[in-house]
Every structure is written in structure tokens, then in C-alpha cells.
Image (tube, helix red, strand yellow):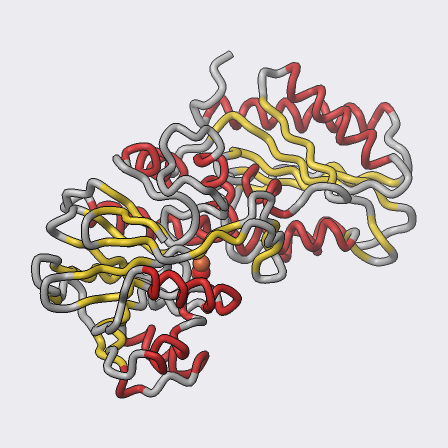
Amino acid sequence: MREVLPGISAVGSPDWDRRSFDALVPLPHGTSYNNYMVKGSEKTALIDTVDPTKEYELICNLVKLGVDGIDYVVVNHAEQDHSGSLPMILELFPQARVLCTEKCKDLLVRLLEIEPDRCQVVADKEIVSLGGKTLEFIVAPWVHWPETMLTYVKEDRLLFTCDLFGSHYASSDLFAGDNPEIIPAARRYYAELMMPFRKSIAGHMEKLAGYDIAIVAPSHGPLFSPPDMIFSAYRDWISDGVKNEVVIPFVSMHGSTRKMVDYLTDALIQRGITVRPLNLETTDSGVLSMSLVDAATIVIACPTVLFGPHPLAVSATYLINILRPKARFMTVIGSYGWGGQAVETIKGMLTHVKPEILDPVYINGTPDTGALKQLDLLAEAIMEKHRAAGILHQ
Ligand code: FEO
């Protein structure tokens, strides 16, 4: 438990050794579930709760803080790592009212069996005064669920953002300060959770430009004060701008596809392009996600297994499709033994992204000089596309 500002305390917990989230996202730095107690002269509000595994620590922090009543529990987001302790809080503080969006109320009822009449739905820009601490709710859907909102404390120019601007990073420091690990951790978090919603986030950030914000207090990872560093990073990530980079998620069974990846990698480097070959056997999904944030081109490289693409390539393609990166060009390279529909299957999976598909290079057996020539042509085509996009200047 620590004081953020007079009347505002952080009462959440780090989770130092958690290594996986949603059975999907690797957590190399652990995470934290931040929540906050805001005490006005008349009323008190708890901003979000914590993961159910940290309930006991939350209670200890409230006791240490001397909290003997809670008037409001603001639920910015219904996902259980922030709402999972809500039933316990509502039981301990029977007078507490839940402030949330309409959609959030529906989710809390369905996910946690919260009594609907404990919830008070708030509207965009609605204000609740605690006495010297004025909460303004900013409805901000799709970061990264449909019910999300942010909460602004006017007097302190502090914005509670829940998942937005967060990072899965357990730290003993309350604020990010100049820790060089925080922006890469925030980038990883953005790539894994927020990237599909970059257009919504752009709209929300435009709205936030109308607020005077001195502190951003997310519910994962350190706080930002001033928030310029995280705002600037997000503006870059959510922009339509791409970089002169090619990501090659690849898998190879007997070496033919690997030879093609190595050859194409070198051919692209020779043409002044940054390349990230990622071996899907050993690359965690977070690294793959991060590599997609601003790469201009994605080349999926895989052999066939029986009648279609290797399952690791299927999994990577599925992830790429749902994360909706802003890559402008994609293609497939690889080698097959006796047929299969690898290229068509992969292309058919790209339903949520609309890149220009460059000519694939899909060959039978080991790459011969003809195949290498095709890879040279592909490298040449990518170079021309990057030049035309204004991201390669040579
Ligand atoms: Fe940190 Fe979407 O929950």
C-alpha cells in the first residue's frame, strides 16, 4: 500500500512470478493488479479491485489504510483480473455502490453474479463528487473489451486507465521514472491486447487531448508522471505509419523452408531492409506480437504437413489475423513434399486484415536455383513496395 497523492492510495499488488495470462500471453516480468482508494472529504471510492488470487492482500492494504467504509466501487473494466474481488468487497462493504457502464453492469452480472441493483450505471462525462475529489467518467469502449471506461480525478489531474497504457511488469517502484524496461514492456502489452483496437484508441486519445493529465495510473505496471512518454509511444504504435521491416514467422521440418528463409533474409538485408526471422518452434507469442506493431511486410514461411500448412504456422497466422497489425504487404514461402494447400489455406485465414498479397514462393522439395531466383524477385518486389511507401530511401 502506497500513497500516490494525498487522498489517493495504491492498494493493489504485484504478482512477481505469474508467467502466463489468459492461458495465452507470456509474462516474462510478471504483472501487477493495481487498484486505488480515493478518499474525499465526504465519500470514498475504490477504483477497480484485483485478481481473486490477491484478495487477501487487498483486504490487508485496506485495513492498513484504516478504511472502514466504501461508498463507491468504480469498475472501469469487467475482466476478472480487475473485477474478480468485487464480490468479496461488496460483501464486506454492503453499502457500497458499483459505478460502471451499462455494458459493464451486464458483464458483472453474468461473470460474477453481482446483484444488478448494486450497480449504478454512469454516462460519458458524468461526474460524482467525493468532496474535494471529483470523479469524471470517460466512456472508452474497446480497450480491450466493449464495456471499458476511464476515470479522471479533476483536482489531481490524474487518470485511472485500467488496462489502457498498462504493462505486465511487476515492480517495487510505483512510477515508471526512467526505467528503460517499461516502454518495451508496454509495447509488448499493447501488441498482445490493444493492437486490434488501435483505431478506437486513437479516438480515445483524441478525446483525452481535451483533459489536463499529470498522472496516468493504469491497473497493470507502473504509473506515468508526466505521461508524455507513454502517450508518445502510443501515438506512434496506433498511427498508420509502418517501418521498413519484414517479419518472417517460420517453421521448417527438414531444412528446405529454413534454407529459403535464410536466403530471403539475406536478400532483404542486401536491399537495406530490416528483417526479423522468428522461428516459431522457439518464439513466444509475445515476441511475435511485438514484431507486428509496425512492420510493413509479413512473410509466413512453412512446409506442408499432410494436406495443409504446418500447425505452428496456422497458429501464428491465426494470431496475426486476430491482432490485426497494420502491415501493408504479406506473402507465403515454403516447401511441400507431395502437394497440399498451404498457401491457399493461409491466405484464406486472413479475414480481418487486408494487406496486399505479394506472389508466394511455394516449391516442391529443396530450393534449387530456380527457387532462389524467385526469392530474389520477391525481395526485389518487397524493396519496391517499401520504396513506394516512402519507408526505404535507397
Ligand atoms: Fe487487465 Fe483486460 O484485464
